Image (cartoon, rainbow, N blue to C red; front, top):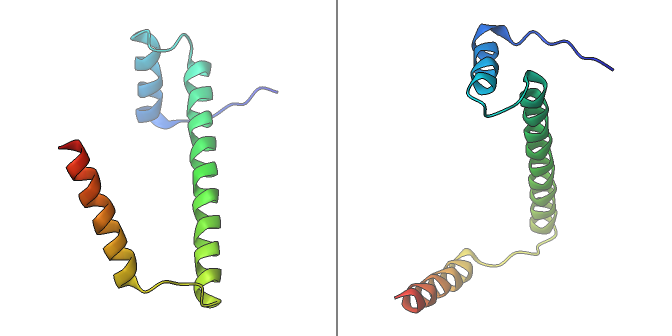
Length: 86
């Protein structure tokens, strides 16, 4: 199924430049890549939303650690990594 899209002058210029510079072989190739990138971003956002929902559920259920303990653990980890790398 063919899709027609009005990109506006600025985005159309970007697409044309990418094709004329040889970065892509066709306008369709540029647009397919753009849609793939949007799809990847949407998946990352869905994963982030799920992680946030889980964190909120954990907090609501009392499954938390005192911030000071977490910060101490992260500081020790960072210090160990810095010492290892030199």
